[in-house]
Image (cartoon, rainbow, N blue to C red):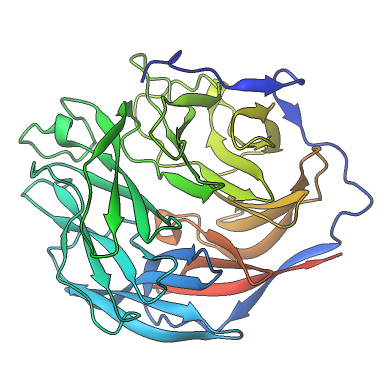
Length: 415
């Protein structure tokens, strides 16, 4: 992407700022309270909160060595319920530790759902399509899978973000490799062309609208994230310049059209390959927060910015953790003044899923280890969501047998 394609104004404080001292009203503890998971053996979980505040969990359930299912469940006050299978796949499905399937609920017609997964389209290791299926009866029946995107190239498509709009439409954003097609095995993501960021809108009948090219050169395999608030869609992703600077950018749909992308944090991280560590965005109370991981200047850290004008301007980056974190961030608003951020950090031979409360004025609580887990790729990316006044988290637990299962729980914040 063109680095000077847009400019994000920075509020008052130049440069990167460390979080301030712990405020007097900081939480005394942030703990993980497990709830019974509907998964026996699986991974790649996602959490989705509908516009009318219903919480969904989706994941890949491992049925056998050659069979998997995309399943989902809905939170029903105290437990996961309405557990259903969307589709079943085998060796034709692309199942990846960092690229999670998802589900989204239409609004206001809550009986309509849409889900996505990844399916091979050719012989290459990274030749796969984004497949979507829809339901008009609250998940009882699902349509056959069809491609989300219009092109039929045998190339990489994935890292999808889907969000419900307020007119029975779903906006879908994905990374698209149609320009990278080379006819070879893309094992190391060494493409002939650049990965692009594209979008479309899915109607309540399951049909997609025209496609939109949002950025013609982006990082190959970092997750995207998006929110819909005050009639606008905000998408964050890891960009990629001609000189291999891979920093975080944002693109906005203002209600009428997609605008040009702008940079959020100018870390100047030059890296010759994809770090597989995408950003996270949250909105609430008319505000926006974005968190991400960087290793600029060979210094790993997790950073956070706030916006009080829906992304028109952002604060200077706050350092959440610069003591060798692994990244894998997520974020949610706790209340009008504070966000909860989660990330992973090494602890001996394992890793901790960390949590910290940070206020808009830069005050931060101490960091808490929610749960210990494997630091390997098997443990995937913990996912965070706020629904019905509670904070939920899902993650892939790696057992001693090196098998995995999805674990879920509530994050309890004690004042």
